[in-house]
Amino acid sequence: MSVTISLHIFSGRQDPVWELTPHQVTDLTRRLRAIRARTPMKPRGMTGGAGYRGMSIKAVREPGLEPHIFVQGNVVDYDRFALNLVDKDFDLEKWLLDTAGSKIDAGVKQYALDKLAVLAPHALSADHAARQKAAGFAPVLFDVPVFDPGKWNNDPGVCANNNCYNYANDMITNTFAQPGRGTGSMFTSFTCPDIGAAAQRDGLVPFPSTPASTPASGHYVALVIRPVPAAVPDYHWYRMDDDTTWSHKHGSAPCQNVDESGNTITNPETCDRGDYIVFCGYYLSDPVAVIIA
Image (cartoon, rainbow, N blue to C red; front, side):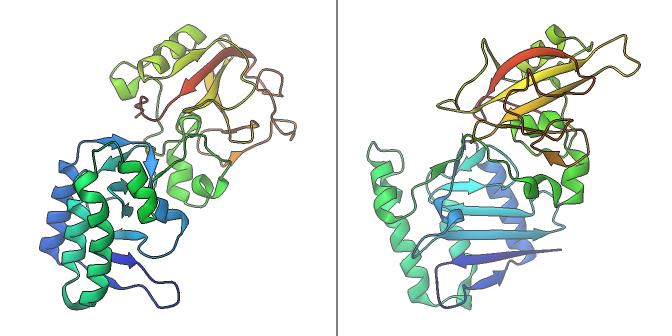
């Protein structure tokens, strides 16, 4: 078991890397659990940039810690989850720098602290976004998902333990999520009204017509049913991606962006859905509002 911190600050030189002590690992876990605020924003440093780009945390078999965490500009990114944490006072970031001790040069540490100092007194002020941009690490909003099969297919555990409902909502929970379970009241029958109502309890919002473009916030999903009296009644979800085509994931199988005939899905109402013959309707999934489990 180990937790390794990487400080992303160089382009030509190798970034500093250090390992936390067991006591520091316990402290890190406590600090993360104490953060309550949530955001759909992601740290800009995850996509590159010059200068200080944040810190990544790699945890190996540490109970209570996600294996990959990225921290920058008061956003704590959990990698596999839609909603991230908001470290309003930059305390976690500054604490992580302190854990390096002699592993990083004093000038390197001060450079990173100077970048944070530009923002810290203004974290909740009206000009915070402008100051983030000026400092070079304004967070970015990744609302509409892209078709990224590697995210879902490359890790056998992720592929096996996340289903169509996880994929449609773009949330990896490793729980084979079920409509309604995240908010304490799961569906009881394989019908459009019942599963649709359970999804709404989870935070999805019905959308009355066929979406022609991506929404301003969140993304669109579609529900279909393999109905009773079929021998094995079931439901399935599709997801509209950033290019307005649709993709999906059948249970523990890899995700894909084609229908049962191998064609690109431009409309889940008219594509080949196999025996999922009942089209229930569209919903808006907004990561700020949706809870699944």
